[in-house]
Image (cartoon, rainbow, N blue to C red; front, side, top):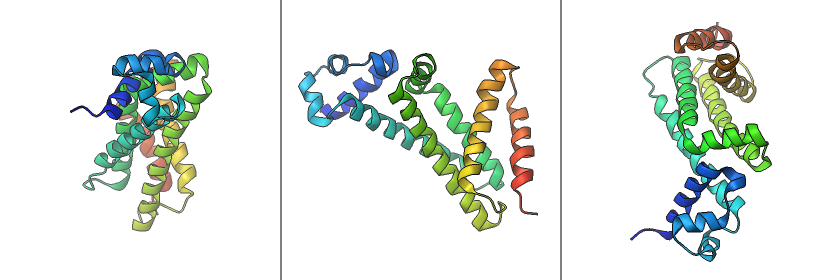
Length: 190
């Protein structure tokens, strides 16, 4: 038996992926889920609540992707860089996140901007936790982990997207070298 709540969530993901936040209505979700609109309200009080539930699930998926990259078999910063790379690859291939990023850029939809900021904040919390762990292990110099996590994520994201789009495509090797020069050398305990 198919769980009705899960059908609603999957239909909402499909609708947000196809139509964006602004273009999604509870009527569209109900039609895609093949349920009455009132059924949705048994599980979610509003489109906004449904949207935040979905983004919370995506944030959890991203955390799982990052944790998988931290296998503990390579040097600390190699693993951290790999985790960031895996997160950005996940984001760039996730149909809903791609649609939301386009909507945010084109329309500046407040709910979308807030949702994507929430995803970024979850990644920053994860990275800052890893930086703290690195400090405790003696791999990372004294720093403010939240600030460094923010700068790491934004720098990596900028290299992958903005630099590549505005100046020239950049290879994974060049990104790794830059990451190493900027963060590893600068944060390594001497």
